[in-house]
Picture (cartoon, rainbow, N blue to C red):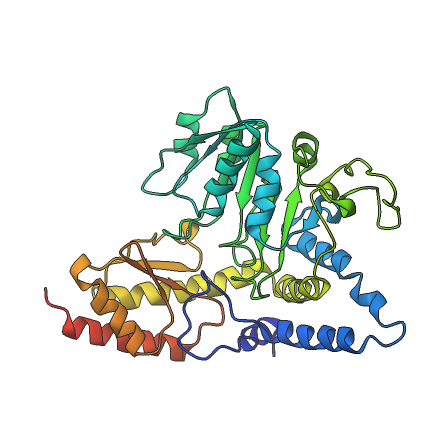
Length: 376
């Protein structure tokens, strides 16, 4: 059995699951890691906790292998939103971003602007929700010091052109919310200054997992507004007792307290498996399945609103039936046991490398029911 086949066999969910853009059911390696680390913590045998307490270093090494950032440029976060808050509260100057991006991005910018009045949001006019280099180029001003973007738009499934954006923004900070593509899109993270992501979606590591990665430029320019006692000193051996010491240089400063070591272990196990298979291989497998889903939609004349270009899509397929038939399509999917997300007049299908032929057969049956009942 190949590594890729082992990876696909690690999907434990029952057929019919097409909602990885909302949450990814835990993989088999994550379940095993969770059980093992939980057993270790529950027993707490003499000398056994040392390895558990060093899971942070393992997690940073695993993130480094997938993103290309150095381990010392990475700090654990409980989720994407916390990482974005850390980053945006540290920005001084104008930031260009889309109000239509996932709420974690505009909320962090507005909260930072309201609280500190150091960041000034400038709202990008997008191309039907898609953030593109061209739109950014036309709306840049001298006061913009940072640009924020989602790697994959959660509503359209559009994959941002990070390299193109980097070319047009020059040396401004590029802040990326990577959650909708992390682990499944072979993205050029090296062109970004800030990358924040969680592991509960496509990485299938569960809630409470995430990271913030900062380039050297970002670490130098961002102010670590929320920096706790674990964000001081050069290493964990330095003692912060009896004094409030300055934040550490670099990403380490952007933490408040000790994290969840079992969550670190879960995230590490998921990323180590992804790195072994390669993100590029996973992306290719997902692309094949997305093509199958689009072909099924076309066969039953279900309108597809998301991109058909493999270069612009990840694992999300967005269906946009006539408004009067949205409930009918949702009912057909539900009645055939398919888990999807319906929002803003569209149905979002999220396809992963482990999406099985059985799931696609269930989708075909749902489309059959829908097309039979639909009145044109």
